[in-house]
Structures are given as structure tokens and as C-alpha cells.
Image (cartoon, rainbow, N blue to C red; front, side):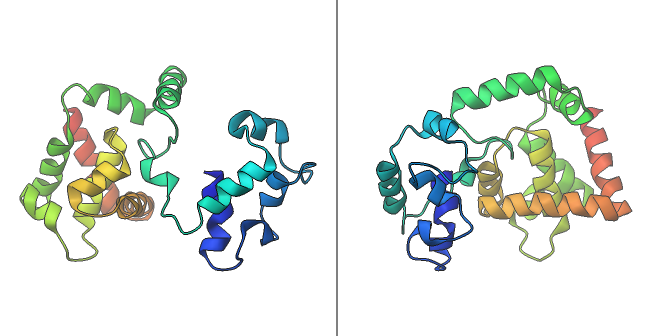
Length: 200
């Protein structure tokens, strides 16, 4: 993740090497004394690399296709399997909001096919027609992706594969619907109605 961030200015062709970018924490990672802003003890704990090793690690990433957000779990967790399991356990203990209650209640009998079929039926389409829609803005398709993201543990990658789009397109679709819900009463009513039907 740090390499992805530190190489963004290189990828954007603003600089040729990451430490040349003046508004980056990269110099602090590479300097023995740090820059006064970063927590060097924490960096050592997680990276356990000398400055020269970290710089080599950065340079090896130049030109390589890498996006750590591709494997984000459930839209908000990034890390190894044991880290994700630990955080999910913690969330389960701490949070008793509506969305988590929905997921707990729905998990026993609801899957992606049920959600897609319900959205398709609401818009008088078949599941295949909904999945294969190309016409924009394709609000109904976005709503299906939003509900999959909200009510299941599917990743953006998995949702994207179902609909034949990239993980970033799936993520953007869910965000678009979230924004629409805030300002469009009809979309809000539709999504709330669909969620209620799953609970029933």
C-alpha cells in the first residue's frame, strides 16, 4: 500500500523517482532521521526494511501493474485473511446497526442470485437482461450492484465479474446509488422496498 501511494507521482509522470515528489512522505521513509511527521517505529514494525531496501522495493514497483485496492474485502477491509477475520469479529461485537442486522438475518437464505432476480423483476426484466445491460445510466444494474455490496460479503472484484465490469466500475456503481439515495426519493423508496422484501 505504501509503495502504491509513493509511486503515484511516478505513475502520473510528475517525477521520475518517488522521493523527488515534494508533497510525499517518501523522503521520511528513506531518511535515517525521518521527516518529523511519520512514525518511524510503526513503519519499522510493519515493513522491517532499511531505507535502502525500501527504496529498492519502491523502484522494483515502477512500471509494474499493481493496485492493492483490487482485493478489498466487502468494500472496506484490506489485509491478510487473519487480519480480516479479526476485524470482522470486532465489528460484529461492536456494531449493532441496521445494516449489520440485515446481513445477519439475510445471510442464512439470501445469495447474489436472489438479489439480482428481485431487482430484475422490479424493473420487468430477466436476470440475464439486467446483468448484460449496456445502456447508460443503467440505474437498475447499479442498484443490483449496490445491494450486492450492501447485503453480501462479495468483494468489488466478485461483483464486477458477475456483471462483466471492472472492480472499480462495480465500486463506482455502488457509490453512485448511495449518492442517488441521498437526493432521489424514488431511488430511495425502491432500494428500501427491495431490502424489505428480502427481510420478508
